[in-house]
Length: 300
Length: 282
Image 1 (tube, rainbow over the protein chains, first blue to last red):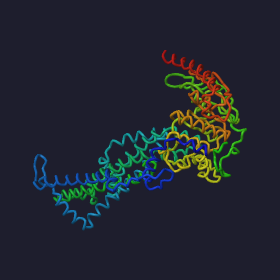
Image 2: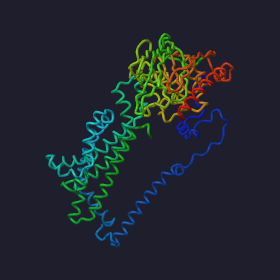
Image 3: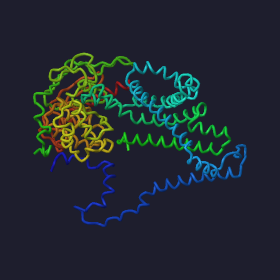
Image 4: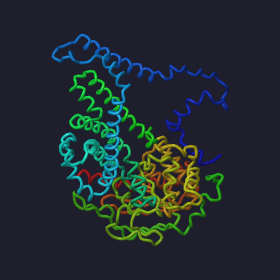
């Protein structure tokens, strides 16, 4: 018998058991006397938690729509006024019309492009800056004061300044979006750096890694979870900033669409714009979560 | 009798990879003083020790006696205040791949699989014969974890993680292996098995091992030589040769010779612990 083999712990790790379990009924009973194999559970029984969660989600959305319907159809006015609020039916009709027009999709497309640009530029600058600030005290002490002064200014407050700074309206809106997502990403990256377990750095040192290799192979992957927290928060703030900027200055974008609907007394379009913003925000945060699980397979 | 690295590939690790004249540690008048906020603290009082190539030396002492500090200075993480540490005549100036380190806490990179963790050192040193992964696989086999090569550390038990830690340190072909209470966080059955396994690996490689522990049984079971340290200031109060036959297995722990050593160390440690305890209460 192989002595090294014998040294394996008596208890396999929980993950090993978990993986072995679903395979067990399929495998041939090699050494054990044949015993009755339990019939595989039906699909519904195995996926009950997921099915349940999905059913409840659909139910809760339906209840919300029903409440909305009742309040608006009856024109309830009890301090909060639903008199002018469009009903779900009206919004659906408007949506049908909007989905046939190119203009609506153009608004959505322009907003997505602004988010994409502002957010990606923010990530590309904030992540390396955060890594460097987390690692080198000189950089941190030099840059942190600027960050601390600028950070409390909401991105919206930058709108007039941004219009002055940038030659085109488009650039100034992208800049606002950039500002909104920049600080959450930066601060979370710095926080991630300060939480890196020093024993991992010492292990890499004793294995012969250079400063650069430690940065790339230890600090960066160790920070990834925090970086993704920052990206998720940053994406949320980016949408807030973008919509506000579009409402204040602009001729395009889903925020502009929503505000214009109010000016033109197209009340159903207000709700349509809001729902579109919500869906786009949800999709973009799902995208970040997907990217995170692809880049960090060890966490799932 | 040893069938540790079963079908050994010609390129795999072998005792020949280690030269028996390598791995001499000289701790030369080393004193370590920390100048902290709460005043000056002497962690290690001037100490001189020479460890011969291939020796298995345990540093035994109560917690806070400076044994880990001494080990960390050999590793290069802590610079001695006075004196010098040399490995094969070369002064230690910082951490380096010639001194493999196994930590008390789990120190595997969580984002790397077992294989990637063990291949880390060979990849960095570009010791490419034949590939870092092939070197990793041989060492993973040596600690009996071939089936788990593609797993991530958090999927392994504590004992398995420490075995990967040992494989990772050895895959770099260091001159010495430094171990800082590596089995401290494990349950006693796993500990006993880990100790036995470590001795087999050591017998195979003949590498110099410096092993820090507070566990008397562990020190006697493993060591050729046990250095007993006392607390505040940390200093070596005894240097005892363990004259027990090798190879050793768990039966040894009930052997009369073993028990005699145990009594000896108990008396010493007890005295030191009492002293430390009284100092804390003052």
